[in-house]
Length: 533
Image (cartoon, rainbow, N blue to C red; front, top):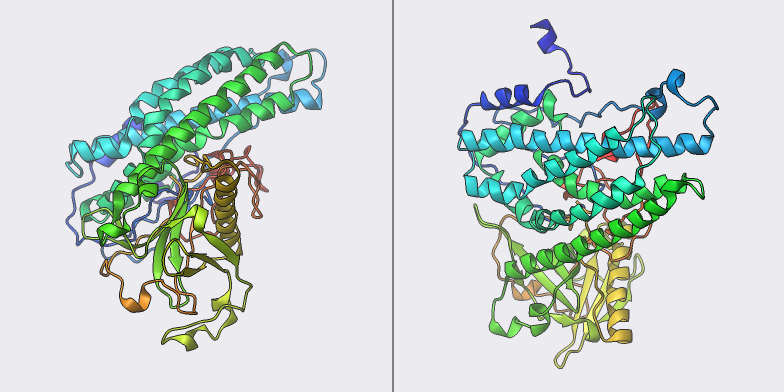
């Protein structure tokens, strides 16, 4: 008993079979459903702060807060290198860095395989056996995860075979050029993630599901991570491949036999990721189009129907404190109110007429200059409440539409402005909308928090039509089209920028948010779990 009461080690010492037996012992518990805000593709924006864990509700009667995620212990290549079997000449610093990068690639594959098997045997199988969810629901949430396990096991096996007795690896380029095209099998898995996350959020309102997932999260085998962390690990791994290959190539000397193969592998992985990004973007866009609700037929717009990509979306606020959800499709801006009904996915009812990008005017409102209206004017006496506004307006063959949006912070405000400007510039210069696609880095990314209650209809006082005052506001997350480094740091391989604030969401950013760089090190020399994912 003494050992069982001790704090579990951060090392993953339990086998999958033991994990399964533990999960099977969890009894079904009937508890009152707990409503929680539905979260969709994030992290990223989501679909990050990548690496944040799902915020599962505590079991009834428990007041303990969710524990922080545990870190995996990991090794450096230099800690595994057998000097006695190594080369007679000392390795150069450049070669050591190359070996470290190759070792990290292999170690990441091993971690991913372990996580995928864990998701299957500790979550999927017990929930099916205990009838916590139906087989159809589990198939929707877990998607084609089973098919990814042998895929990554194959790469891991090849990398291990290529390792010499002393622990070093001479060539990996030919392995990667042969294996990387198989990543196209990721398309159905990534395309399903928006629906999977929405259904998982919905099912977590069920007491039995909530209790099971919370018990798993509190068990050592999960490293205190939520289910979505494991389900999102393939996507975050996918977008990290270009960075890992670039790191290996960077430390490969010119003229090395591996150089040509690595350059070819870079082209292959960029092409594969771009194709998956495009297809996943189309799937995400269609999902949200299907969730739109129209109060009247006049709100329907052909620009929405023909949109194939979603550039940006997120929860919004106006100067009266009303929350909206704004969607920037490839060539139309749509302002909605999110509505959630019990045991039903969130829907988004249009509040105003859609605004074509070609007819949209954008204005950056300086902090403190926002005019406030409505009956709660006094609530905006604090300057903090008049920051991070921007205005969009349009005269699309009718009366002026003018909407003031307030972002959650200066970073998100700038990303919204950048995204709208990109859409306007692309429409003006080429006549075509920007091809942003699904931004794979964010957690599934778009970070959205639909309201759980309230009516769908907007009252005249909160219609969003400005009468000299700003009305609608936004605190959304931006899903960009270019891989850039934002003001909060972190290279986003597929270009999704997200809020880096901690504690405001789970893995989908919606909570999930990995930083997609090479593993960074903590002061104690260990790699951070969030960086590894």
